[in-house]
Amino acid sequence: MKREEVDMCQIQEWYPKFKSSSFKTQILQLPETFVDYLIDDTGPFVLPALVVDEDALPNRVRNPADEDDFEVSEGSEDDESERFPPPAFPDLEMKVRESIESLGGAVFPKLNWSSPKDAAWISPNGSLRCTSFSEIALLLHSSDSLTHDLCHAYDSCSDKTASRPENFFLALRKWQAALRPEMEFRCFVRTRRLVGISQREVTTFYPVLLERKDELRELMEEFFDGRVKEAFPSENYAFDVYVTKEGWVKIIDFNTWGASTLPLLFSWEELEAEEREAVEMRVVDSRCGVRPGLKTAVPYDYVDTAPGSGWDQFMRKADEELRRQKGESAGA
Image (cartoon, rainbow, N blue to C red; front, top):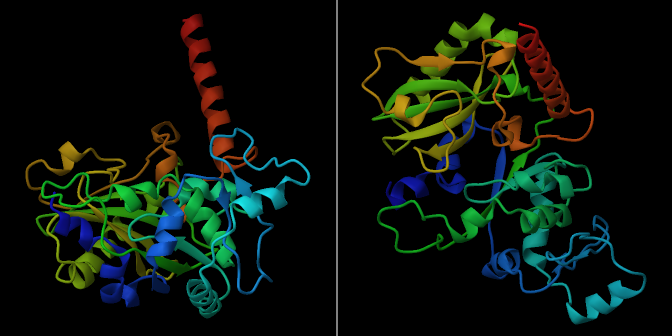
């Protein structure tokens, strides 16, 4: 894989070409001082000082080495603030506030390639929904998955000359509260041909996908031929889409071919095999066909693993099914 192919999948590169077929997004270039803040792990984590603090979270100090991140003894917060004064990014803060307002008051943040999906647990609402600069800074700084973007973006490139791009961007995407996970799909393109489509949320069986499989495949084939095939410059790649209840196809993201992109219900060997005569679409076709995989889950890559959540119920049912099968085997 070449660096050029990786760069093509940055949101600030593809979104301007496909904005009419995607979710509304504001893209801001990040100052290098903020990038340094995100990757700095030499001291405790301190939220940025705000120009306007009406939306501020209680200032938190976090030492990554501590098991109990936010248990701070009484009176110590002031001491920590004096030793580690919070940085300020007033220009970026104001641009973020304006963008959030223009996008309806709530956004989903991501950097050039990745979202802070692994840090959702730390946000006040337990998701990637953000309504303030403080919430965004907290998610970005707390995410380990963003380390790839920040420090290892080109590790898989045969022509690697740098570890990161020259500039980083913050993409603020309008929060979509009513997205249905069963309508998210990953499309695989090889030599500019659509060769496969996979259900993206592979941890759940959705009967509606079996009923609408042919219809949905045709929608995505038509969308690829009419909107993506000639517009996206790479030959080999994957792209994620969402199909609305009205039948419109919306682009969520573009991904590199192979590397860290999950093939979901395919394998890369299958996708790279001989030319296919028709586009193959795979969905989970029974409750026994679900696959565990937290990184493949619901819209915008957020999974709720709390007690009573869908994932928790799935794991409980899986354990019950496993015990039942063992019981049947023992009695045979």
